[in-house]
Length: 462
Image (cartoon, rainbow, N blue to C red; front, side, top):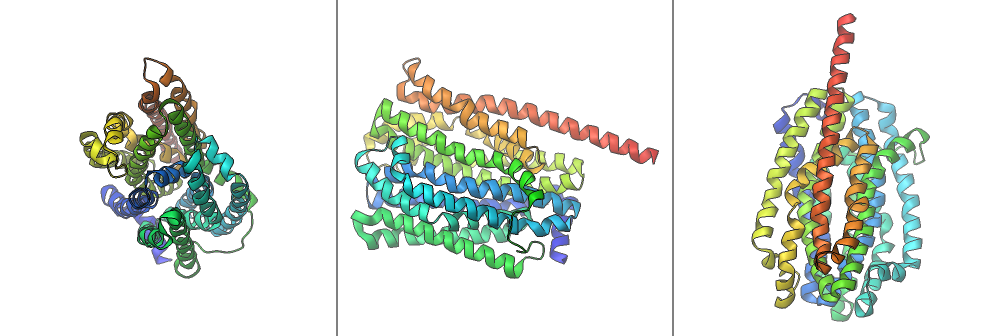
């Protein structure tokens, strides 16, 4: 109980900058290690097996986001409800969170396993995989689908830990799982040999996710002072609030799957397998550079949700400003080396100098808007945290579907861009979505200002 109260007190009364650091540093460090999952799979597979296997892993990656989407849908939605319930001191809601989450995630995971195994080949064909790449990708992805329940329960329960404000514990558990994956990758790839090495990378991921699930369950069964596993069942009063918030977060994951599937298909059509390889390497770098920004957003969510639930609107404003400035500074750590040394970055994945030379200028284009991502990601997290699902969903859909996909299909046909138009589509999309996000944020803070004035007037009358 003391731990629970201390966490809440820190969030609603502690120094804003120090609280940001205490929430964000472990989250960022943990998420960086977590980001090494797919990043290191691609590096180990590319260096130890070859470019066909590396491309197979990267073409498969968008479909693994189905699992991430499920974990995010229920995990982020539940975490948002939990943070606000802690702020409001609503014990009844807190006690329902985990049982509802486990029931929901288990049902959806079984569906993914069945449908994923049935349609693996067809899904990969949509991404433009063919020949040897397709065959290797089918073998890799089927194993990953088999571990869906471990992945989804491990990741979603870890999100509840973050919503509770236990960022250090959550990220320590995630980091331990990620480190295990990194250790197992070369061991299992070597043990299974060149012909089956890609299976070793898949098994390493599944084993690591099982360990993540086991550690998370142990925490809630034995260690947590705030959240416990009670009855495992669907809670009617939670389904709406969880899904309304979680769907915007899920859209970012699932739309990434759609987005990347079309990207790989378009790259194949306009540039062939060479440009699929370049795109795979560039997206690996982009995904890894996203990780610390996602980390800081994990610290941002309980800070905003708890203070919003407690009606501490001034602190909501202070936390938003402090986190966004810090996220932009953090983005520079990745932005500068990638923009200055794009060829060296691509060489981490690609051993052919000619392919690296062709891809380096387009890596710069892809990353041109990255400096704005701290504001953009935190804007989406902000609306998820305060329960404003529609704004978060609009931003996510605009960035990954409504604006981006038409541009990916149109730009290669204009100005002689051809395959390079794929990379320019990201820059144009991000610029437009950033403008929309800023407009929404201004409106949200004006609304909170009006609530403060209204509450002050009511207090004066009373």
